[in-house]
Amino acid sequence: MLNPAGTPVVEARDVTVALGGRPVLRGNDLVVRHGEFVALMGANGSGKSTLVRALTGLRPLTQGSVLLFGTPLHEFKDRHRIGFVPQRGTAAGGVPSSVREVVASGRLTRRRLLRPAGKADRAAIDDALEVVGLTDMAGDGVSTLSGGQQQRVLIARALAGEPELFFLDEPTAGVDLPNQHALAEALRTLSGRGATVVLVAHELGPLEPLVDRAVVMRDGRIAYDGPPLAHEDVHGHHHPLAGPHDHVPHVGSPFDTMSLDPREDRR
Amino acid sequence: MSTADLLDLLSRDFMQRALLAALLTGLAAPAIGTFIVQRRLALLGDGIGHVAVTGVALGLLTGASPTWTAVVVAILGAVLIEVIREQGHTNGDVALALLFYGGLAGGVLITGLAGDGAAGLQVYLFGSVTSISPSEVWYTAGLALVVLTVTLGLLPQLFAVASDPEFARVAGLRVRAYNLLVAVLAAVSVTVAMRTVGLLLVSALMVVPVATSQQLARSFRSTLLGAMVVGGVAAVGGLVVAAWLSARATVAPGPSIVLLALVMFAATWPVGVWIRRRHRLAEPFPALGTETPGPHEVEQHPHEHGQDCGHPAVRHGDHVDYVHDGHRHAVHGEHYDEH
View: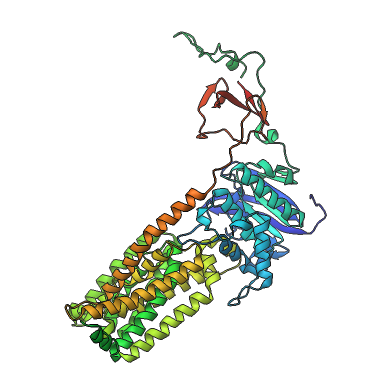
């Protein structure tokens, strides 16, 4: 829900990030309040992924500050309060690992060193698997799943720590439509439980109805921040031409510039 | 050699020590090896092994115990490899190669300075488990226990860091510290395995059992435990085979251990291929939606046309149509027009 009065969960002030000396983010301010579902959008290279990486502490800031739950990022210790889904094609490594093992590694934010997993840990892992609809596949090897299912595994991993704030970096990239719907369903459940979601997306697809605030990035700056935009407002719209289309190639004589084509005349 | 002779040989003191050392090595090396394979650094053990040659040579030169100088130098080398890799100035494999050659060349040079020649190094390069002394068995046992306790105790953390360092960092784990810990443990197990299989074959004991076990296992934990079983069986079995053959020829236990592990891999590999094939056959086909031609909403037509989407693209005036099931699609806002 759009929540103008809620407590700020993420407060980014003047966030500037340079990669190899080139500025990728320039002086961005962003406040995300409790319970919001924010989509960070923009073209490739606009800095939306970098912004999320800066907010999670994966990218050092050149300038500016980030507060998570009111605590500066470098002092932030309550890591179990945030869940992160990295932009990644696969959840598999060099050694086979089961879905449950990968999901269980998300529970580490709440587990102490050298203590076996307790009842609450197992329950949280079961719940995370159920939310993404992979309970039946818990024992399967991650590498045998499809890309979309692996992405759901990564979301379940973030869920297992029962965080209040989610960062998702392009969760729908390269995921087929049935899996996008499953993802959207999982995120709807999360959002319904009161979690705050910050999501990077190139295309919203089935996630569109969930988003209640869109932040559009352009050239490392926030260009728009407000209610979600219709697809056509962001990407433009082309009107069909009246009259029949013919598919016959327009043959021009050597002296003809081809500009007699009626469609080209209009531009 | 008859069975009675073999049993007599195996019951000797030096052989008992050798068996114990081999068993511990066979358990510890694959345990840490699993994490190294998970991080796709299968040759890390080899790199550390070469660096350890310099450590052994320093021990020979100074008169200190070669085992301990090897431990120190191997740890330094492992940390150096990790630092070079993390700083990203060179690729991980280039960092390994640099230390490979530096370690080996330094080791041979320093052994020469010590006046020992290649023979002094031989014991460490190819292993000589039957000449192991009681005190060395204790060192080996202690170091192997340290490796096993730390890897099994920190299994969840090490798994998280090895499989997805970025996620682990956001989750608040000290990724660099854990990576260094894995490197140091690898260095320790290299020196543990040094007397058993030798520095040149050390990496085999860290990698081959893991490769064998992952043919059959589906989870990380079962891969790790399976690798330990394979490693233990190969180490003890290889030693017994070497002892049995020793009546006829000089057979070093190191090569027989490694070859036995490779035989176990060769035996499980076809089984793994068969299991994976059966899995693929059992998988259901992805459900195919029935496409209805005519101007349709995006809801019914999930496909996003674009470059390399698989549908032939046709330039059509100011836009591009995509040939689809015998008709031409033009994207128009929420739906596709038929052109």
